[in-house]
Structures are given as structure tokens and as C-alpha cells.
Length: 112
Length: 112
Image 1 (tube, rainbow over the protein chains, first blue to last red):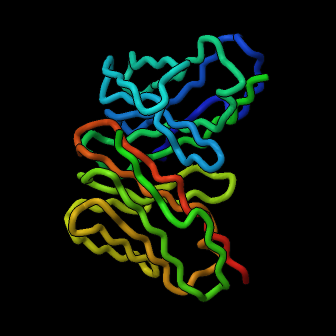
Image 2 (cartoon, each protein chain N blue to C red; image 1 turned 45 degrees about the horizontal axis):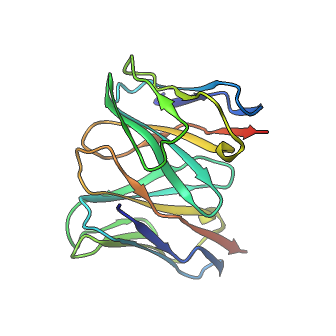
């Protein structure tokens, strides 16, 4: 079954404690992306990756890091989380050239 | 930067009424995609439009891409309770680029 898997689904953490949200896809997609979703603001792109070792900033990259060492994985790293990063995060993947993007189930992060 | 505006933000309809959401980009788009997100769920791809003036139908849903490729609409005929959710458009300026900008979404509620 084609899927994008995010972990964890829910996370409550404290300010400044480094965390990683994992994202894995089984469709051999070149393109992967991270979004955050906040009420009234829709989905905002954080980072994306066109292929292994190729990453680029989206619209709201501040406070986040990503890596793409393998095609299937695209982890999102918060080195020093702050309360304004409390949000719902989605990972997505698709093939290069556009078309259907598959989204993970989401990770609800709370930073206190 | 590229902006994608979506209206209305909310729409409440009686079951059986029609519904339309509009998407307007500040720049010419290469393609536009539509997604549906059920309450508590993740965005699910509905369709991609690429050609100027393109019209595509999926059962009761009709999607249009404007002649100038700067606007799009999603029309649902005779809404049903299963249509409840938030509908997002997402535009890209370059099919082969990674950046995509989502509209803020239109949340549809349907009264039985």
C-alpha cells in the first residue's frame, strides 16, 4: 500500500529540547516536503527536497532543519523548539514533475 | 513572493445546495492542484489542472483553471454530508520546481 508514514503522531515537549519528526515513503518518490498547518493559515511549506542530498527552503524555514540522506526518508529537525512552533505538521511526497502528492497522517506538536 | 488567495474561508450550505470555492494567484501558475481535508484528517489529492482554460469533472465536482492560469475554482453540485471538509488549492509556478503555495482553504459544512 502506497503510504507516507510520520512519527510520532503526537508530541508534547519543552522549549529548547531538540526533537526529530520522521517521515518515510514507500513509493520511490523523488520529491518530499514538509508543511505546517495552523488555524486560518492553511498549509505553509517549510522545506522540500527534490532528491537525495538536495533540499531547499520553503516559505517558513526558520527554526527547522531537514536532511535527505536516503530517498525514502525526510526527517524534520527542530534544534531548539519554541512555543511558536506548536502546530500540526504534514510530510508529503510525489514524483518529480508534479502530480498527486501523498500526505502523511500528520504530527501534532506542542511546545510548552 | 507568490501568494494564493482562496475564498470564501467558510461556507455553510443545506444538503442539496451547490458550493463553489475560488482560488486566485498573484502570479501565473504552471499548474494548480486541489485537495480535500476531512476534519481531523490529512489533505487528500483531488485533481491537477495544467492547461489554460481547462475544465475537469469528477462526478459532482467540477474544476476549472482560468485562461490566464492565475485563478481556479471548484464547484460541487448538490452537496452531500460526505462533502464536509476543507478544500485547498495549491499552485506552482514551475512544474519542475519544488515550491508550492497553498491557499488558506475553504471549510464546507453541510446541514442535513
